[in-house]
Length: 236
Image (tube, rainbow, N blue to C red):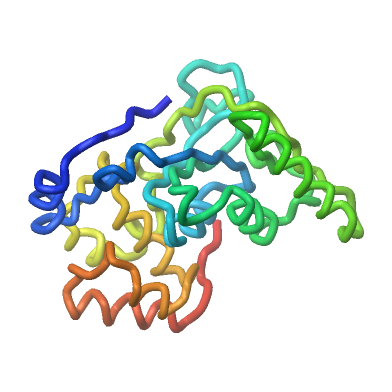
């Protein structure tokens, strides 16, 4: 399980403003966070998709669902590529996360274990909601839904170069301007959000209303706005 960072507003503000090193947790919001885990094929796109949604504070890609200890991309064993999502359920519900899950990948496509479609549940409530959502999909799908629903076990973070992949590899000037070290990408809210916006995974209006991005320079804001206007660009 990941560690929850609890800090006071004053210390967080002193870290956030000069370097944009925003954690996934802000003040008492750390006490409200829940975590959802999904596998949707390649994990780069889900990282971008969920990262820029309202109410989501941290995302990280990695490996889960298997038995191999400390898997790596080159030695995945029986694990599956997945995304861990820290979110505030008072802002975004688990049901809405499930809607994004179903809408943004093909749950009928056969894949090897690395790229399975999976909902990993942490409690009976998540299991029930996941099962109901799958039944609804089966009612409207012309092909069998291959998504499986499994209990969550342990999540292993993927290598640093996989985290916020689009931001750090395709938009290096923007990424470098944030002052975030690659090893800290899994904990950065602003990196999660920008990683989605730069590939058009949310709207201009959402970008403008996102309080986490208010400290961006005018140059960076203009750059991201142009990318959003191009529409969705994410792919694996």
